[in-house]
Image (cartoon, rainbow, N blue to C red; front, side, top):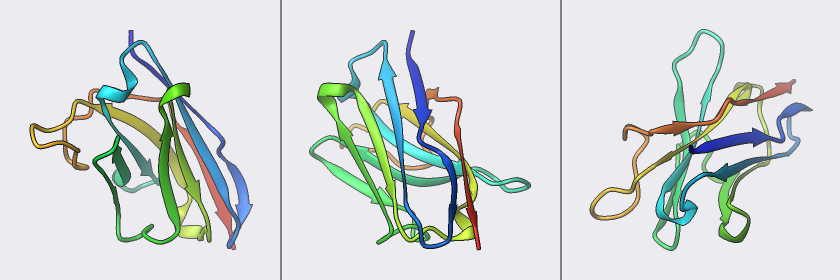
Amino acid sequence: QVQLVESGGGSVQAGGSLRLSCAASGYIYSSYCMGWFRQAPGKEREGVATIYPGFWTYYANSVKGRFTISQDNAKNTLYLQMDSLKPDDTAMYYCAAVLPRAGGGCQFDDDFAYWGQGTQVTVSS
């Protein structure tokens, strides 16, 4: 049984930082492409960042230069360092996993098979 559990959300003021974590269990973690997604109230879910070990990282334009995705394979944990937070970053944040494409890596619109329960991030102005 694959399980993804997010943590690290909270409330911060604009300009602040948070680090989200996603603990994975139940599968060979390093074989999957991992992603962070978010969904704000009344909005569709959107991709934030993806990472495939030793191959690539990819960021949405809205977070490029402010967010950093990383992972610790020894701990089976995915991270999202979020700096210079803005009120528009307020959302529920989810981590997800998908088998990589034949050429490696993954895209936001891939069929991510596994999802965590989410962690709330609230940024006040």
